[in-house]
Length: 171
Image (cartoon, rainbow, N blue to C red; front, top):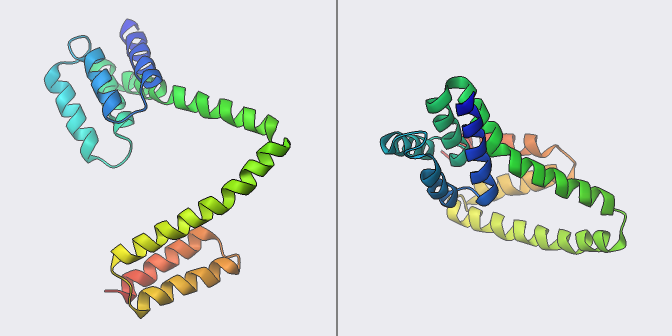
């Protein structure tokens, strides 16, 4: 039980003091190597979490937690790793929910929406240019997707259909 409490506090502290990524890996190295795992175990855990898809920090937490305390240790490490960001987002959401009727919040959102729209258009344009599908097929998929979105087709369906058409049309 002492190990599980130690795992919880180590991962809670690391995730409260860092923003994940390389900063959390360095802090985690300092906290766990020699206390909970060996340097070789940490290097193996870091390498494995780096090549797997998903959050490196969460995979590293689960791996170290599992190495120290088995399945329970992995669960405790994961819980401690996701607790700080979850509570922060919950707090911000509660504050914004209370402030949503304030005039300055609605003006803020009204000003933010066009900026985000333009940012999305420029990002899509850069992806389109780098993707190599600038022939008539790529343009046809883009225009068909735009029409589908205008007709209120769900975004997920548009993306899946466009991807499938791209697989078969752009081979």
